[in-house]
Image (cartoon, rainbow, N blue to C red; front, side, top):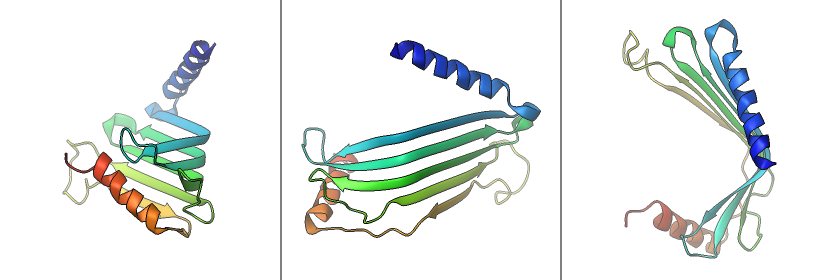
Amino acid sequence: MAGSVASAAGAAALEVAKGSENGETLFYVVASGFDFVLPQSPLSEKYLLLHAGMLKAHYRILVNDSGAEVEVSLQDVLLHCDQQMKMVSTPVNLSVSVEMKPPHAQGTADDNAMRVDIGTSRINLVLTHSHYVQIIHTSESNIGEQ
């Protein structure tokens, strides 16, 4: 059952990509109600949990290989620790827009620079000492050099 649903979703996405107007290719993804779990370390029971009410992502390849545009938004984002303590007091909305030129584009470095616009609603963090320690340990265990 899951395989047929995934296959149907993949076929639908391919049709959307092929059916884009003006020779542009468009990929559009919508996901709702998902959680991203970031463990403190590979074997730790401590984690940070990011919940998003809605994810929307658009990726558009422009005609004649003239570049691409990406728009990603997350709505109703919540952050919790493994103790179910809220780390943001109200849901947050985030958005990122990116415009990219192909590497071989004509023009100056400024003309061809990637343009990134990041937006966010007001964020009220509730960060306890244990949260701070956990964030430091998480970044050392997952990002830091070993």
